[in-house]
Image: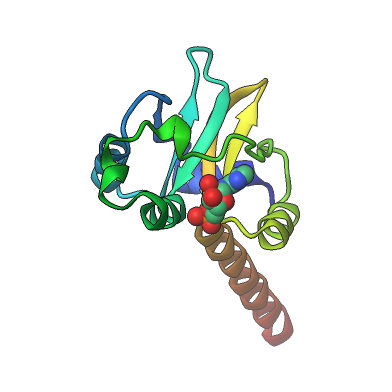
Amino acid sequence: MKLSDVLDSKGWETVVTHENVTATEAVKLMCDKHVGAVVITNAKGQVGGILTERDFLRRYAEHGNKLGDLKISWLMTHDVETATPDASVDEVLNIMTNKRFRHMPVVRGGKLVGIVSIGDLVKAMLQEKLQEAKSLREYITS
Ligand code: AMP
């Protein structure tokens, strides 16, 4: 199973912002869109950073109440790992587990086209395994 299969089922839309917004604005965006991560892109749609719930927690410990006014360029992870739609779910789950993050922006031709979370991938994999088990049961009992 590829990331494109997961995105066909969950949707290709992404929640993006730019690096000059404040932490408060980014939190509002994430709450409005019900997502745990926002991708920071430039005018060409290229990925320049990622900011997740975990970053806010860690940065709050550092900056306390001053966090809300800080620009997200100070808070985000700049060195973002991305995958292509052709990457396999197994391969991406391995990267996420080894590198200890839960979000993977999906890029085609250098531009952001989607994002998957570890939850999306585990859900897709579980559905695939359940379908396989059902097919095997039907084959055995037919
Ligand atoms: P997460 O588990 O996704 O909430 O992220 C944990 C940490 O890894 C945070 O500092 C994120 O900014 C960072 N992070 C999340 N996704 C990625 C990614 N695809 N590439 C690099 N860093 C990431």
